[in-house]
Image 1 (cartoon, rainbow, N blue to C red):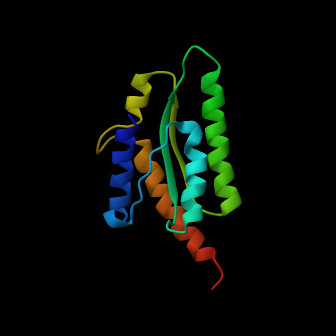
Image 2 (image 1 turned 120 degrees about the vertical axis):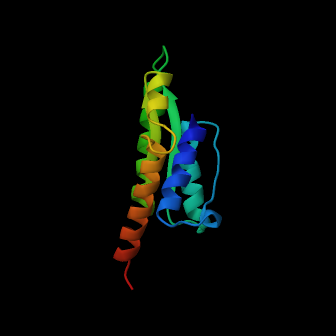
Length: 132
């Protein structure tokens, strides 16, 4: 599932002219850890934007609401406090079928690809707003 989102991110970045050598890939144990990883990447000084991808599928407990909500809040907090584009490409769904529908291969709906396009757009926008 996340592999399909990642392939979408790569397609989106390539489509905007981002070179493969300019892509930094990191993997985390779960969606809850995405904000910390995004913050670490930004602090490294080696990136222009972060695309957070993942998948949280509702289960039988309240765990889904906690993980999905805190993941979204954390990613937003990192973006706002750092001033860097940090895009939310985390699929939060009820079923695997819904997740697959949001991570289709080339030519289909892929949240990762959409987030990558947004990341490049926001990086360009924010760079243009920085004082000379």
